Image 1 (spheres, each protein chain N blue to C red):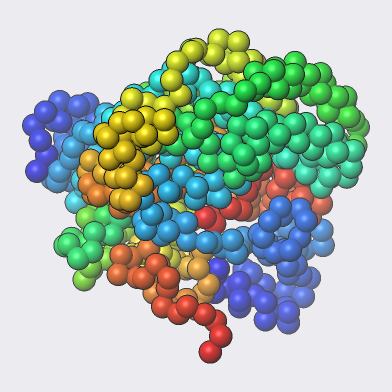
Image 2 (image 1 turned 180 degrees about the horizontal axis):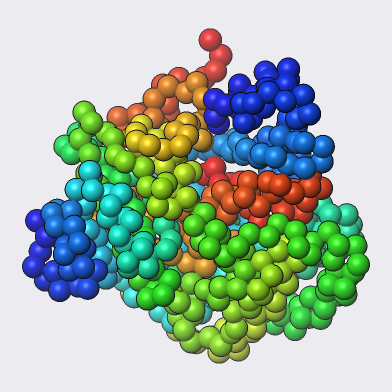
Length: 161
Length: 409
């Protein structure tokens, strides 16, 4: 649930008015605002924030794995508004059975590599991404190294058979 | 590393990146072991004569899983890994990580440590820009600049060695302050360097700024409009060379940068030459900041008053039971960080560097995500070189100033 004291913040009220129900939670910690977004609405939310609220930059996009808790994955977006010098964190919570979310490459082109990295290292699928392929790991790699159930030494200790 | 790239390797029989067969098109594989890629970057260029029709980048050769390793070390141990991310601006990486964790811990850093951090980070910026200038010039064919740049860089590395015992992997900033007390005689060494440095920048400029060959190779090359740069995630000197005066040090001051007087150099041309001008001017500004820090260095402690985080003084350990207990606790199990998350941003020599640290209340970070500026900047490469000549690729790549450790992590 979205705490009441956050509703007074201009971005939150504007987003609530534009897309009712898109914000499903949020908090303000260390003076950083986090909004939890209903995953199906993420593209609409981002489009609104970019076009109406001047969040022209996607500063960062990553994920956190909370294995074995469900919903397991958090896709984390860090938005930046140059005009007002404001930062905003968006989060999408995804179940392990359906680790899929729409791609925001149509909003910011920079999301291209960021989403590929998350796909590569977490195995989260970004729908409608123009080219969703591994980016850091080799093409034939098995598993997603940044998942918490992936051992830190990997599955094989040596390349010698 | 992508499938289409593997597919393209086999496509010497006229099939192109775009999928339309054309006998005129040639696919050229540049790197991963190419001197101008400054590391291991592989570029695939589809050529029509000398013009690049399409470019594709293949990264990941230097992926060492630093983010995964971070999750298995205690907070203080992670500092040594951050050095290895962007190995040309180690102290900027140290600083960003430390600031993030200090924010989570809520500890106050004493002014002396903050100013020392500013001074050393600015020296790091100078040394990083020197490597960029030297290698960028050598790529384009100006050999001698490289030798001058590395002469001054050596002086800076000597200063780092004096402070931390290490030339490159310094790990000098720790959570809670500095790793060691500043060494005896540091003031004289740094002053000597900073006094001489502006004259040295004049020397580089004499070699390049009005050099007709340099101008021909860089002016109008690699131009990308500002809107595209923002959309592609580019930050730092590349944005400032396209006219946007945005610097994290000014916009969101950290580590008491608000107390320093400096300018943010900008140019409007947005080409390789403008990026050169911006970075050269940045070196002068960095020297200016470092001089202010040197002259106004406050006295006082170099670590925070946080006994649960900072290792106690060795002398106190011999006399005080409490200090001994804290030492034992910190060394054996580290310190616990309250649950929460922080995204800390600083201005690294390459642009906006972000550390996203998530804590679950234990003594090891739950997740550390490093948003390297090179990763975003490199993404703009195809936009920069497509439709241009192959000789401009080298100049364009050099002007991005990427470090592959920062890209691949």
